[in-house]
Image 1 (cartoon, rainbow, N blue to C red):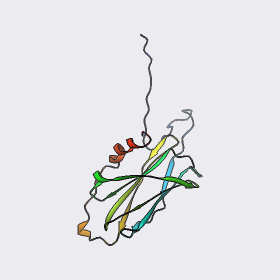
Image 2: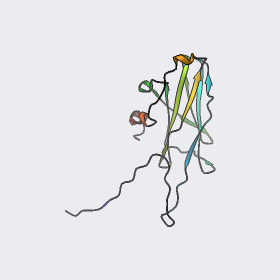
Image 3: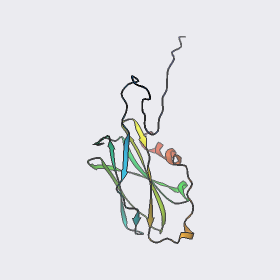
Image 4: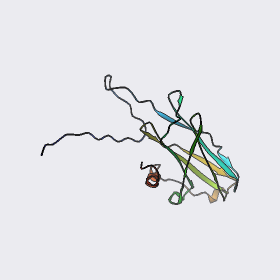
Length: 151
């Protein structure tokens, strides 16, 4: 049986060539939040990001899924698939029933890259003493992505 050497590369984030002649550099995919950092309890909130690569809007992202959770309770996060609307903008609707500090993380797969920026959302006027510290690992929600496009 012949042995064939192979190289397996996996990345989460950006890929860049470090030396000249190593091939073309892949431009970073950037995800910018359009969602306000304040919201009212029980009101619809538009979760929105703009996805770009270089100076061009990414119209063909493989997947944008918002992971949303209340601070200190990431194990009960909700995964909300986004839809492309226009010019690299991907949106979804949700609401937050209770006052508190929440997080949204935009798990974005586009052009063979995966980025997952996170943003805080303060809902209502929560008592600072009621906010539980959130020290969850930013990759913690990746296990929930298996239910989506297989990332």
